[in-house]
Image 1: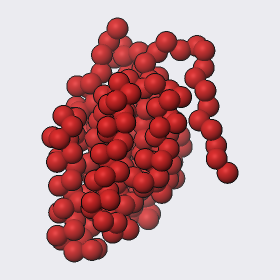
Image 2: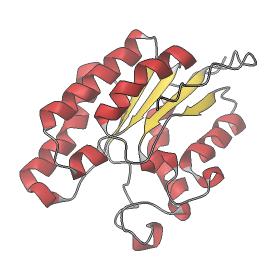
Image 3: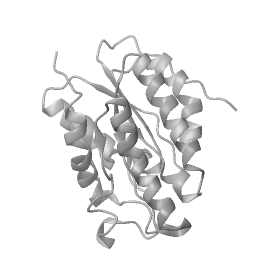
Length: 197
């Protein structure tokens, strides 16, 4: 079944910040008001940034899945900023790097063509498929950021993945206590594309 993206509410001349992500942004295993996305909305408001966040993240998402959903989201919300927090599920499945690159290229180009600034959120994966694959996977993000002149978060889980106290029992997903750190990891790159009216 296809779920249409809800139409824009008439209320808003606010610029939209669209988050296209996976479980790390969908808030897997934690309360929605405790996610880094919810914390970001509060930070934006408190610092005088008049953005409305649309969180189009879904647990288990791959770059291919997000690529297929993005055009509708761009059309429905006309975002000023698009955060692409994706790739971990591709890497954990060992999908070809070339395929992941092509999906990211398509999403970045579609977002930029729609007038949005893109923030690319980098990931690292464990060397399940060998160190060479893991290295090429991580190197993909700075290559794309340079190619498309987008701000880059080098590793979204920096300081989190290495700390068992900040991870859920599955050792994959950050817990509620980790969410402020995730936001702090993202903030320097994001702030470079934000504007105040």
